[in-house]
Length: 92
Image (cartoon, rainbow, N blue to C red):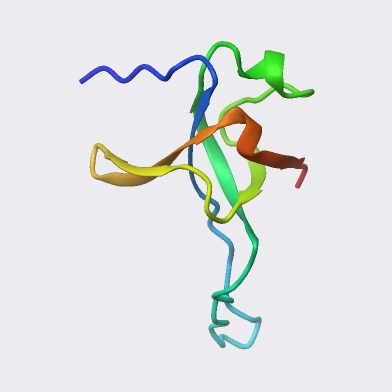
């Protein structure tokens, strides 16, 4: 299967944060958070023209919680978002 994104779209997946404390307690995710962190999988060719920074695979982005469309690619959940839905690039 071949997958090609439209020029201004970005394919992302949820960023895996460790929700455990050092003691082993699992922390609950807040339900009403206004934004979330995602990891870039791939992006369209015109994304750099819209954003003021370059995107590479495995970059971490902050996006709106309600942005994008959920898809499944090769059995993995992913999200296709518009480049204008990116709030910030996070440098870890």
